[in-house]
Length: 207
Image 1 (cartoon, rainbow, N blue to C red):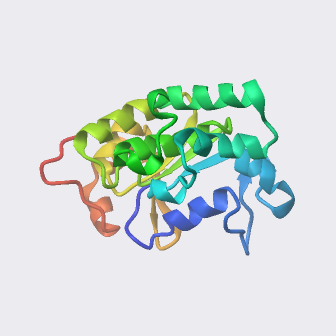
Image 2: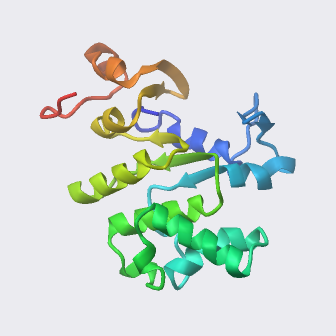
């Protein structure tokens, strides 16, 4: 999902798992309406990885952060331990399970934040500006993890090159509306379309 600031991207993301509720129309995920009576199941199915991992990491250790969601679902003991281990291994962070999250690098915290979502076994993972504030190596590590997830992913980003690398299909939003929907490389190869909606590839970028 691409678009300039104030296009409505983050607002839409917050509707996908019921942080915001629609006042007109409806949001449907896997045939289930995002409504108060369905919020528990919707939030299990739709995992959001926020731009700032510190919005998701608040426990003393990485293990406790990743265990928080499944534990609130009633998991305990060996089953909970396995869920945490699998989620951390999926993002390449199994070795840091007993470390405080604030001792990790920005890229590591981003991957641990993703692990907290994966531990809930979602069917859709939403990333809000996943490459923001990451150095090139951390961007590459995260991209490799995302590609290997095997899950439906929605990436909200200003980073058009990252979108070109990770997303076969893109949607451009502007002023709260979808203005284009198609193959990513096709959309990014249209400078008039990008310019009309305040988007621009880096001058050194090549698709």
